[in-house]
Image (cartoon, rainbow, N blue to C red):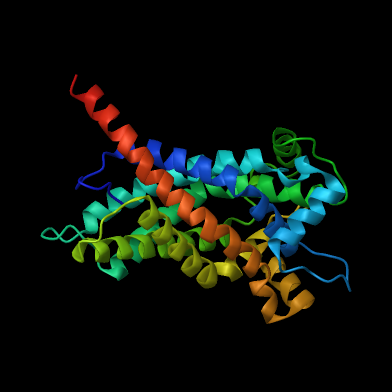
Amino acid sequence: MVADGDKNTPAVVSLISGGIAGGVEGFLSYPLEFAKTRVQLRVENGQPTPRNPFLVITRIYQDEGLRALYKGCGALVFGSVGKDAVRFLFFDQIKESFADPTTGTLSPGRNLLAGMTAGVVASITAVTPTERIKTALIDDARNEKRFSSGLHATRVIWKEHGILGLYRGLAGTTLKQASATAFRMGTYNTLKDYEKKKNIAQNTAVNFANGSVAGVVTTLATQPFDVIKTRSQSARGTSTLEAVKSVLLDYGVKGFWKGTTMRLGRTVFSGGILFTSYEAAVKIVHPLYTGVTHT
């Protein structure tokens, strides 16, 4: 995506602004991510699963304290910085390559394709290992409590399973990232291109609304991949096929939409924060970068 008034966003600006936006979004929305992950992991038979994310957050806060709600946050924020830096960078560069030379816009299909490509790259380079650590920490905190920190979890998983242990759930994560980035970036930029044609002014409120809409579309379209990824990346870890089987055995087909309400709460909030933060960061970073390069 391109900041208002700029046809081409330099790669360095996309990278830095995406990283800043990812870190801000990851930290502010983490309790909702924590609640969603807890719901998607296996629970005891007969135990009801709350759908209200705020109820889950309240219960965890009362039973385990505030620190519990941020268990695994460091891994997610670190991963979000890398993930969003990479996917904004690749999306902006791919968008410029695919864009109509006359109007500078993309068709909805090309928007989705650009986002899908960016999502695959982000999954391989940043998302899968950090999501694996985050999910393992959240799962481990329920029972075994083997891991004292994200770094400790990384060392233990590496020692027990090698690098493949850190890439547990790669297939599910890549499917999720490819589809999620395609729908999130594609929807956001389709809305933005439409607004430009209608001369709708771009401001913080419009950016937040566009990001929230993109978050809703993304959640509904990609929830099964998110559930499979979470099951694959539990503390002990399973293969993607085993994760699919476990969901079907536990809940049937409807289990693939487990945590949808939780994730909707987060993605509406986080989508607005992510794109608003990105646009704001571009406005700050771009002039600084231009000043340095022209000095």
